[in-house]
Length: 242
Ligand code: PTJ
Image 1 (cartoon, rainbow, N blue to C red):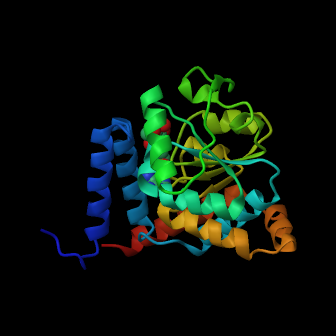
Image 2 (spheres, rainbow, N blue to C red):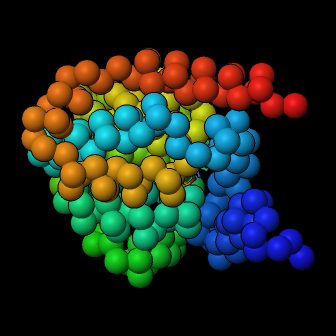
Protein backbone atom coordinates (compact mmCIF):
# COMPACT_ATOMS: atom_id res chain seq x y z
CA UNK A 1 0.00 0.00 0.00
CA UNK A 2 1.52 3.30 -1.10
CA UNK A 3 1.42 6.00 1.66
CA UNK A 4 -0.89 9.00 1.16
CA UNK A 5 1.98 11.51 1.31
CA UNK A 6 3.87 9.72 -1.47
CA UNK A 7 4.18 11.97 -4.58
CA UNK A 8 2.60 9.28 -6.79
CA UNK A 9 -0.36 8.60 -4.48
CA UNK A 10 -2.75 10.96 -6.28
CA UNK A 11 -1.98 9.60 -9.73
CA UNK A 12 -2.63 6.05 -8.50
CA UNK A 13 -5.96 7.12 -7.00
CA UNK A 14 -6.84 8.80 -10.31
CA UNK A 15 -5.91 5.66 -12.26
CA UNK A 16 -8.10 3.51 -10.01
CA UNK A 17 -10.97 5.95 -10.46
CA UNK A 18 -10.61 5.88 -14.26
CA UNK A 19 -10.48 2.08 -14.29
CA UNK A 20 -13.67 2.03 -12.25
CA UNK A 21 -15.30 4.51 -14.65
CA UNK A 22 -14.22 2.27 -17.55
CA UNK A 23 -15.81 -0.76 -15.87
CA UNK A 24 -19.00 1.30 -15.45
CA UNK A 25 -18.92 2.32 -19.15
CA UNK A 26 -18.35 6.06 -18.57
CA UNK A 27 -14.77 5.97 -19.88
CA UNK A 28 -14.09 4.01 -23.08
CA UNK A 29 -11.29 1.43 -23.07
CA UNK A 30 -9.47 3.69 -25.53
CA UNK A 31 -9.87 6.45 -22.95
CA UNK A 32 -7.60 4.51 -20.61
CA UNK A 33 -4.79 4.52 -23.16
CA UNK A 34 -5.46 8.22 -23.63
CA UNK A 35 -4.96 8.80 -19.93
CA UNK A 36 -1.66 6.91 -20.00
CA UNK A 37 -0.45 9.10 -22.84
CA UNK A 38 -1.43 12.18 -20.87
CA UNK A 39 0.39 10.94 -17.77
CA UNK A 40 3.62 10.49 -19.76
CA UNK A 41 3.49 14.05 -21.11
CA UNK A 42 2.58 15.42 -17.68
CA UNK A 43 5.64 13.69 -16.24
CA UNK A 44 7.74 15.69 -18.69
CA UNK A 45 6.09 18.87 -17.43
CA UNK A 46 6.89 18.01 -13.82
CA UNK A 47 3.13 17.56 -13.18
CA UNK A 48 2.70 21.29 -12.76
CA UNK A 49 1.30 24.23 -14.68
CA UNK A 50 4.00 26.08 -16.61
CA UNK A 51 4.04 29.89 -16.88
CA UNK A 52 3.18 29.51 -20.56
CA UNK A 53 0.17 27.23 -19.80
CA UNK A 54 -1.06 29.76 -17.25
CA UNK A 55 -1.01 32.47 -19.94
CA UNK A 56 -2.87 30.10 -22.27
CA UNK A 57 -5.45 29.51 -19.52
CA UNK A 58 -5.99 33.26 -19.11
CA UNK A 59 -6.32 33.59 -22.88
CA UNK A 60 -8.90 30.77 -22.88
CA UNK A 61 -10.87 32.66 -20.22
CA UNK A 62 -10.70 35.77 -22.41
CA UNK A 63 -12.04 33.84 -25.44
CA UNK A 64 -14.89 32.42 -23.36
CA UNK A 65 -15.71 35.82 -21.87
CA UNK A 66 -15.84 37.51 -25.28
CA UNK A 67 -17.87 34.69 -26.85
CA UNK A 68 -21.55 35.08 -27.69
CA UNK A 69 -22.31 31.37 -27.55
CA UNK A 70 -19.56 29.37 -25.79
CA UNK A 71 -19.85 25.58 -25.38
CA UNK A 72 -17.84 23.19 -23.19
CA UNK A 73 -17.65 19.83 -24.97
CA UNK A 74 -17.36 16.84 -22.64
CA UNK A 75 -16.29 13.26 -23.41
CA UNK A 76 -15.93 10.23 -21.13
CA UNK A 77 -12.44 11.05 -19.85
CA UNK A 78 -13.28 14.65 -19.08
CA UNK A 79 -16.44 13.67 -17.18
CA UNK A 80 -14.57 11.04 -15.16
CA UNK A 81 -11.68 13.34 -14.28
CA UNK A 82 -13.18 16.79 -14.10
CA UNK A 83 -17.00 16.89 -13.86
CA UNK A 84 -16.82 19.22 -10.85
CA UNK A 85 -14.31 21.50 -12.61
CA UNK A 86 -16.58 21.63 -15.70
CA UNK A 87 -19.47 22.72 -13.46
CA UNK A 88 -17.30 25.46 -11.91
CA UNK A 89 -16.15 26.69 -15.32
CA UNK A 90 -19.74 26.71 -16.56
CA UNK A 91 -20.72 28.95 -13.64
CA UNK A 92 -17.80 31.30 -14.24
CA UNK A 93 -18.18 31.52 -18.02
CA UNK A 94 -21.90 31.04 -18.66
CA UNK A 95 -21.09 28.42 -21.31
CA UNK A 96 -23.35 25.55 -22.33
CA UNK A 97 -22.14 22.07 -21.39
CA UNK A 98 -22.72 19.45 -24.09
CA UNK A 99 -21.64 15.81 -24.28
CA UNK A 100 -19.88 14.79 -27.49
CA UNK A 101 -18.50 11.26 -27.81
CA UNK A 102 -16.41 9.23 -30.19
CA UNK A 103 -17.71 5.91 -28.84
CA UNK A 104 -21.30 7.07 -28.75
CA UNK A 105 -24.21 5.04 -27.43
CA UNK A 106 -27.43 6.47 -25.94
CA UNK A 107 -26.55 4.75 -22.64
CA UNK A 108 -23.09 6.34 -22.46
CA UNK A 109 -24.48 9.78 -23.26
CA UNK A 110 -27.01 9.41 -20.43
CA UNK A 111 -24.41 8.11 -17.98
CA UNK A 112 -22.01 10.97 -18.71
CA UNK A 113 -24.78 13.55 -18.50
CA UNK A 114 -25.74 12.10 -15.11
CA UNK A 115 -22.14 12.38 -13.86
CA UNK A 116 -22.07 16.04 -14.94
CA UNK A 117 -25.43 16.86 -13.37
CA UNK A 118 -24.40 15.20 -10.12
CA UNK A 119 -21.34 17.47 -10.08
CA UNK A 120 -23.57 20.54 -10.45
CA UNK A 121 -23.43 21.23 -14.20
CA UNK A 122 -26.53 22.21 -16.19
CA UNK A 123 -26.26 19.91 -19.19
CA UNK A 124 -27.58 20.98 -22.60
CA UNK A 125 -29.24 17.77 -23.61
CA UNK A 126 -31.94 16.53 -25.96
CA UNK A 127 -31.99 15.25 -29.52
CA UNK A 128 -28.59 15.35 -31.20
CA UNK A 129 -28.30 15.41 -34.99
CA UNK A 130 -25.48 14.45 -37.34
CA UNK A 131 -24.54 18.07 -38.03
CA UNK A 132 -20.73 18.16 -38.19
CA UNK A 133 -19.09 17.03 -41.44
CA UNK A 134 -17.44 13.92 -39.94
CA UNK A 135 -17.85 10.24 -40.84
CA UNK A 136 -17.89 9.08 -37.19
CA UNK A 137 -20.20 9.74 -34.26
CA UNK A 138 -18.48 12.90 -33.05
CA UNK A 139 -20.60 14.41 -35.84
CA UNK A 140 -23.61 14.27 -33.49
CA UNK A 141 -24.38 17.54 -31.72
CA UNK A 142 -27.30 19.85 -31.01
CA UNK A 143 -28.34 22.56 -33.46
CA UNK A 144 -28.67 25.20 -30.70
CA UNK A 145 -25.60 23.88 -28.87
CA UNK A 146 -22.22 23.09 -30.39
CA UNK A 147 -23.42 23.62 -33.96
CA UNK A 148 -24.32 27.26 -33.21
CA UNK A 149 -21.33 27.91 -30.92
CA UNK A 150 -18.72 30.55 -31.69
CA UNK A 151 -16.21 29.24 -29.10
CA UNK A 152 -15.88 25.54 -28.16
CA UNK A 153 -13.67 24.13 -25.41
CA UNK A 154 -12.48 20.66 -26.38
CA UNK A 155 -10.60 18.83 -23.62
CA UNK A 156 -8.75 15.51 -24.02
CA UNK A 157 -9.40 14.71 -27.62
CA UNK A 158 -7.26 14.16 -30.66
CA UNK A 159 -8.67 13.77 -34.13
CA UNK A 160 -10.42 15.53 -36.93
CA UNK A 161 -13.26 17.26 -35.02
CA UNK A 162 -11.11 20.23 -34.02
CA UNK A 163 -10.16 20.83 -37.66
CA UNK A 164 -13.81 20.63 -38.71
CA UNK A 165 -14.96 23.05 -35.99
CA UNK A 166 -12.23 25.53 -36.96
CA UNK A 167 -13.27 25.08 -40.62
CA UNK A 168 -16.82 26.06 -39.60
CA UNK A 169 -15.46 29.38 -38.32
CA UNK A 170 -15.48 28.54 -34.61
CA UNK A 171 -12.71 29.31 -32.17
CA UNK A 172 -11.54 26.06 -30.57
CA UNK A 173 -9.77 25.86 -27.23
CA UNK A 174 -8.04 22.49 -26.72
CA UNK A 175 -6.78 21.12 -23.42
CA UNK A 176 -4.15 18.56 -24.36
CA UNK A 177 -0.93 17.56 -22.63
CA UNK A 178 0.48 16.49 -26.00
CA UNK A 179 1.71 19.60 -27.85
CA UNK A 180 2.31 17.45 -30.96
CA UNK A 181 -1.25 16.15 -31.38
CA UNK A 182 -3.35 17.05 -34.42
CA UNK A 183 -5.86 18.82 -32.19
CA UNK A 184 -3.12 20.80 -30.41
CA UNK A 185 -1.81 22.00 -33.77
CA UNK A 186 -5.16 22.86 -35.37
CA UNK A 187 -6.90 24.47 -32.38
CA UNK A 188 -7.19 28.25 -32.14
CA UNK A 189 -5.63 27.93 -28.68
CA UNK A 190 -4.11 24.90 -26.98
CA UNK A 191 -3.58 24.64 -23.25
CA UNK A 192 -0.79 22.15 -22.62
CA UNK A 193 -1.72 21.31 -19.04
CA UNK A 194 -3.52 18.61 -17.09
CA UNK A 195 -7.29 19.12 -17.31
CA UNK A 196 -7.99 19.23 -13.55
CA UNK A 197 -5.30 21.92 -13.14
CA UNK A 198 -6.35 23.86 -16.25
CA UNK A 199 -10.12 24.20 -15.79
CA UNK A 200 -10.12 25.88 -12.32
CA UNK A 201 -7.51 28.37 -13.54
CA UNK A 202 -9.62 29.23 -16.57
CA UNK A 203 -12.65 29.64 -14.28
CA UNK A 204 -10.71 31.91 -11.93
CA UNK A 205 -9.51 34.09 -14.81
CA UNK A 206 -13.07 34.31 -16.19
CA UNK A 207 -14.08 36.24 -13.09
CA UNK A 208 -10.81 38.14 -12.56
CA UNK A 209 -10.08 39.62 -16.02
CA UNK A 210 -11.33 43.02 -17.10
CA UNK A 211 -12.86 43.48 -20.57
CA UNK A 212 -9.73 45.34 -21.73
CA UNK A 213 -7.50 42.51 -20.49
CA UNK A 214 -9.68 39.99 -22.36
CA UNK A 215 -9.38 41.95 -25.63
CA UNK A 216 -5.64 42.35 -25.26
CA UNK A 217 -5.08 38.63 -24.49
CA UNK A 218 -7.12 37.59 -27.52
CA UNK A 219 -5.34 40.12 -29.77
CA UNK A 220 -1.97 38.63 -28.75
CA UNK A 221 -3.03 34.97 -29.14
CA UNK A 222 -0.22 32.92 -30.72
CA UNK A 223 -0.93 29.18 -30.58
CA UNK A 224 2.32 28.19 -32.30
CA UNK A 225 4.14 30.19 -29.62
CA UNK A 226 2.32 28.36 -26.81
CA UNK A 227 3.10 24.98 -28.39
CA UNK A 228 6.77 25.91 -28.90
CA UNK A 229 7.03 26.97 -25.24
CA UNK A 230 5.45 23.69 -24.08
CA UNK A 231 7.88 21.65 -26.18
CA UNK A 232 10.83 23.74 -24.92
CA UNK A 233 9.72 23.20 -21.32
CA UNK A 234 9.49 19.43 -21.84
CA UNK A 235 12.86 19.29 -23.64
CA UNK A 236 14.52 21.38 -20.92
CA UNK A 237 13.20 19.10 -18.17
CA UNK A 238 14.08 15.97 -20.13
CA UNK A 239 17.70 17.12 -20.39
CA UNK A 240 17.80 18.06 -16.70
CA UNK A 241 16.35 14.70 -15.52
CA UNK A 242 18.51 11.64 -14.94
O1 PTJ B 1 -15.26 9.27 -24.44
P1 PTJ B 1 -15.09 9.11 -25.92
O2 PTJ B 1 -15.91 7.97 -26.47
O3 PTJ B 1 -15.38 10.38 -26.69
O4 PTJ B 1 -13.57 8.70 -26.21
C1 PTJ B 1 -12.59 9.64 -26.02
C2 PTJ B 1 -11.26 9.29 -26.72
C3 PTJ B 1 -10.45 8.38 -25.85
C4 PTJ B 1 -11.52 8.60 -28.05
C5 PTJ B 1 -10.61 10.67 -26.96
O5 PTJ B 1 -10.35 11.32 -25.77
C6 PTJ B 1 -9.35 10.62 -27.78
O6 PTJ B 1 -9.40 10.72 -28.97
O7 PTJ B 1 -8.23 10.48 -27.09
P2 PTJ B 1 -6.74 10.69 -27.68
O8 PTJ B 1 -6.68 10.54 -29.16
O9 PTJ B 1 -5.88 9.80 -26.89
O10 PTJ B 1 -6.40 12.20 -27.33
C7 PTJ B 1 -6.47 12.67 -26.02
C8 PTJ B 1 -5.33 13.63 -25.76
O11 PTJ B 1 -5.52 14.15 -24.44
C9 PTJ B 1 -3.95 12.98 -25.80
O12 PTJ B 1 -3.07 13.81 -26.54
C10 PTJ B 1 -3.49 12.91 -24.33
O13 PTJ B 1 -2.11 13.17 -24.19
C11 PTJ B 1 -4.30 14.06 -23.72
N1 PTJ B 1 -4.66 13.81 -22.32
C12 PTJ B 1 -4.97 12.64 -21.72
N2 PTJ B 1 -5.28 12.83 -20.43
C13 PTJ B 1 -5.16 14.16 -20.19
C14 PTJ B 1 -4.77 14.81 -21.41
N3 PTJ B 1 -4.59 16.14 -21.50
C15 PTJ B 1 -4.82 16.88 -20.38
N4 PTJ B 1 -5.19 16.33 -19.18
C16 PTJ B 1 -5.37 14.98 -19.06
N5 PTJ B 1 -5.76 14.46 -17.87
